[in-house]
Amino acid sequence: MKTYHLTGKAPYFTNCYVMTDNDGNAVMVEASADVNKVQDILDNDRAQLKAILLTHGHADHRETLEQCREKFGCPVYISSADGEFFDIGGTLPLSDGEKLTFGQIDIQVIATPGHTPGGCCFVCEDMLFSGDTLFAGTVGRTDLAGGDFDTLMQSLEKLAGAVKENLKVLPGHNHFSTMDLEKEHNPYLKNIR
Image (cartoon, rainbow, N blue to C red):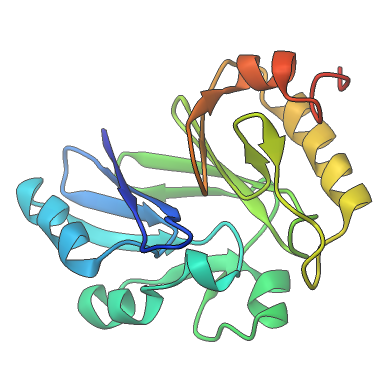
């Protein structure tokens, strides 16, 4: 499996990820990247986009969602809580603990509300797509509509317990990290055991 990193436009530069397998299947996490750049990846790997997964419903994470729907015609997955809160129609709901399989791409869903009412993280192989729940050295803000700091802290505790391996942390913005680094240095995680 290959994983590609793209970014959305200024000012948010939201991270977008495209995974492809050896059988021509592809999955995109977040819909923020230029649709033509996504198409270039699919063409290069002779892959077809099977799904778009949204970690949460904020507009910068679905900046190009409508263009992606039009171009690729694949299903879009988001938690029902965020789908309803942000009024995003035509999606399939994600459930905590659910496992999604697209060809050779296996994804586990971990519900991590707090940044938004229905935020989710995704584990795939050695990667944790953490959206705006967990960043390198910090966590997502909770002062926007639907955010709740105490809920986010509970989600981080749950995430730290669920992720035992030193996964790569691929967040919704900024730099990548690893789970071990975050457990050791992130002030919001290092007191969680």
